[in-house]
Length: 493
View 1 (spheres, rainbow, N blue to C red):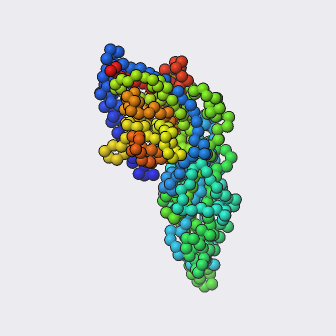
View 2 (tube, helix red, strand yellow):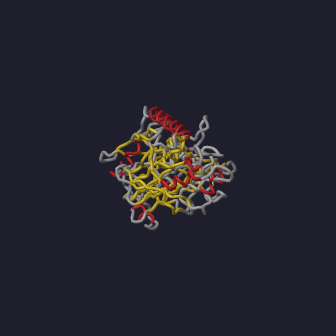
View 3 (tube, rainbow, N blue to C red):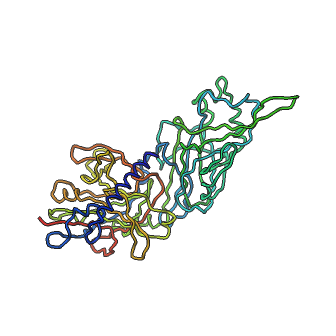
């Protein structure tokens, strides 16, 4: 997670520098990058035109969900019950916490240990959504029938893990999770603490470390305890992010043990043992989206008509298919700049459910031999000298703007100049494009045919958080000045 943040910070810096540089020389509607290299539009030698882009909403769905989540990424827990455009989100967490080493033992003999309390502690990162609506989180024990593996990455939209034994529950306000916490040997901030039933703590204490007891080895411990399942119940309108690898994430077992006996009086000392998350612990994050009754679902069921509003949601979520119908049959010309312009459609709920950090644009290529038939935009999405993809220069990073009513919005301008030039010269296939806001994806990179390689692309810093409505395009008769559009600055041959 830390490495991802460093990469994205670098992308943002590169994009900002490029934006400032290009602002020195603008033409009509500003271009954020490369303005100094584009000749001024005079309608004699250099021309400026807008081409139609038809747009159609779609959802990734269960069938083609390929989003896995590594254990060191941010995990989400909670419920969004009332997003007026994107419906409901149910995020559940599954994970193991174990002793830091095996063979493990508590202080003193197992029959001389007495539980005070047992608390599940999670390292809190952030809240996405309504921070003032209370949530109730239940903690369950995973059923013994589960095959929960530490060497397996799990799809975020699919889960076969079962649970039934309720260990504890807590109701809280999300905005309080960054408050200071004072506990025995643990005074800090950014924790969600859920007290579990003392019988569970007593059970952990009773596991004998001698012989073939549960603490003799990792596999023996897993035979006794498969892990935790956390689910938000009832009300709620937010999801909360947690870091399982954080120092703040642990199972705190507070107990007393017999230290000595003086004059037939038992003397007890109090201490705490921690089970933590490590490389040999399993973890999975399940996220369910429900769109029933939303404008998004209505747009998916409106037939073949292009959509005037596009709904883009982070993984696991939605995307839009784009057809550059205006390019079909266009004569060859010198392309100085070709940019796909995308503008946010503002709503007051955007302050609660904020837009994703980045959008992404790729191409559908039916000739790819594997089942995932998408590739990076040829010629324009490339690697820099430092080995990073030029996502900022390409246009994934938004710029701040305002709409006709003075509302703050984001605007994206994807630079596809070289791709469009090759389409017009007949050296490149005209693809349908896909606009999305993914966490990450794997797709083909290269100039077809013959140079493809499958690459992993990191787009947004985490799953789940981030959704935005952008203005679509209904076709050649669409007169909305903020519609999705392809802008060409060119010279005739």
